Length: 289
Image 1 (cartoon, rainbow, N blue to C red):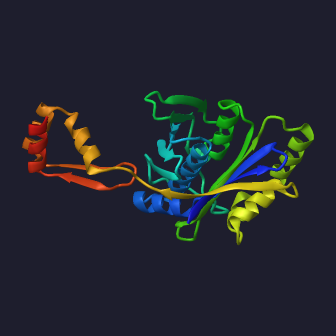
Image 2: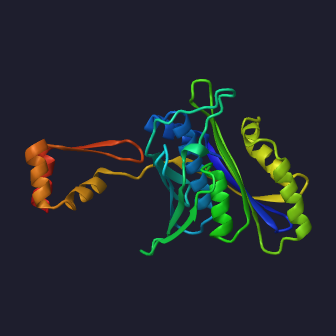
Image 3: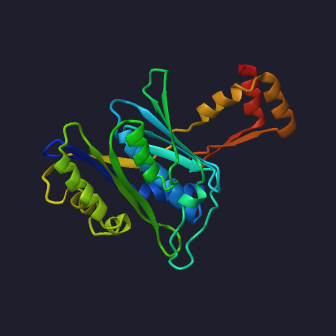
């Protein structure tokens, strides 16, 4: 079961989220049939969006758009404050590794672009904030966004590790944020620990990755676990939603679709589920419209 743990230093100067998103990224890989680099890029975006949503209060939705101009195209993800996330990558077939080590490459194939966060508070006026992509590694881009756009100095580490068959082995990460009132000596201690932290891949493959991440972040500093929340890949698409989308085409276009194709098949971009509307279904929509 995927989960996210929220914690805070007893001094009140820092807070940290650590999360295990392995099953989420496995599900995304299965639904979208992504190859290695696309799997890692999409997985990192889903984990980043979990972190963004966990940063919100109330019943909000966060849309994350990682818009690159290179091989991956765009990565789109939607997460809510209840631990649900969905997402897709435009190019599912990027599969590039370092020859010597077999390391899956991501950043160089994102290209230049934007890190776009749209927060929907349910009021009908979503708030959009954008920062440039600084590396395409997504974790670094998230840290830059949090520091620049939300004015909260942050450190982020996230990754997706694949097995010998390029299937998801483990996925997860952390976010550490400096809170108001933190003293310089405290900041220096935390910065030193983050710099000396073992590779995120090593922490994620340890026997208890959540404890390993928290220990690497806090060291001997006392901290409190505030909450533990369940996470899952969950798509809220439905036949009714796609019916409503078809109705927006108007009677003339629906009539042409019925005459020329005798049916309409729609695939949800986020989860790959197929919805078939027969000739009779289209006739009903035309009459309804």
